[in-house]
Length: 188
Picture 1 (cartoon, rainbow, N blue to C red):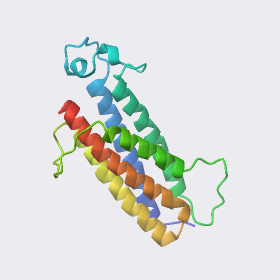
Picture 2: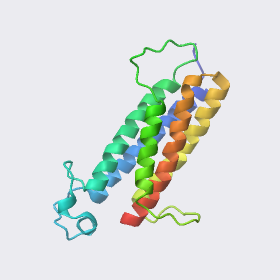
Picture 3: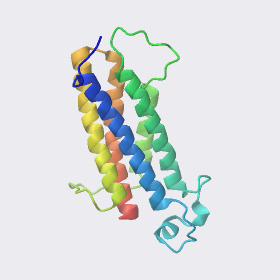
Picture 4: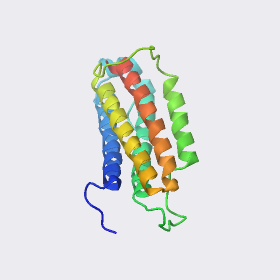
């Protein structure tokens, strides 16, 4: 069935795609902020993490871990787009990747890990204490919009297979809030 360009399904897919891209921007800035640039400890990157703490990717251990987690999240968002593009009556191959309890649990573990590494004062925050933090805040707002559109899509089309995607997006936006505070503390 052909749908108009402004159909809620296309709006939702576009928002999830935009969310994936904003996470990619954060990954790019993470590399710029913490990546190897020939410095041997004289700049902020060296003082924060030092050469002895660099992982196999060349990034310091914590940013390397975050880079890997963000890459997995981007992949999950691509899978989410596939799930959101299906209709309630579609036959989905059992081999098709999905977003379910396992992926939500992994994301919850990532949230817990990073939440334990940053103090968040009980107040409102204005984005911009660091470029990376501001981009994580931007990602959070884009993901919240994608979540709202996903909930609307589920309500209008009744595809219950898409419910875990909305739960994943909810958890992901919380993670981006924490990562923004972490980035502000580390780089701001």
